[in-house]
Image 1 (cartoon, rainbow, N blue to C red):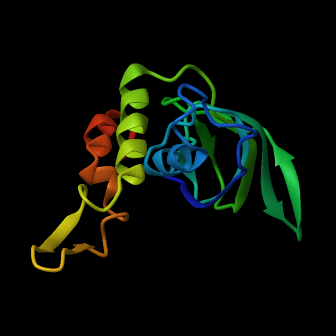
Image 2 (spheres, one colour; image 1 turned 180 degrees about the vertical axis):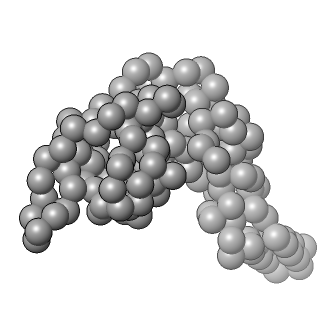
Length: 169
């Protein structure tokens, strides 16, 4: 099986605009966690090894496949593979270019985006709270949060559970 050794993905012109309270940073974080893209962008993959290769992002449209030979890229037309990808006969490396993204945003993904946006916007009093100290005498309130609270946002917000079917193993 051929393997993807590099993926260069351009930023999309815009992320889905389902709700103005969901910033682009949330969509970028969500899309980095899953293999599906909801807005189109250009992508280049470097692939090595012979065998079947399927684009790791979905939906994907491949426009060119090239092989590195004699110090230059040469365009080739590989055979189709049984799983909807390409059958690469040599060791490569291959450069595959195209686009990824498109289609509507399913309700479960919209809900995951909303959960992640809410979690990331919440002040220190709730998600990821590690400890809280309140003094009654001179009214002192001290709150701290685990240093990993933002790194675990996808899991702690519940968005990761909703996105299981959009991850590629």
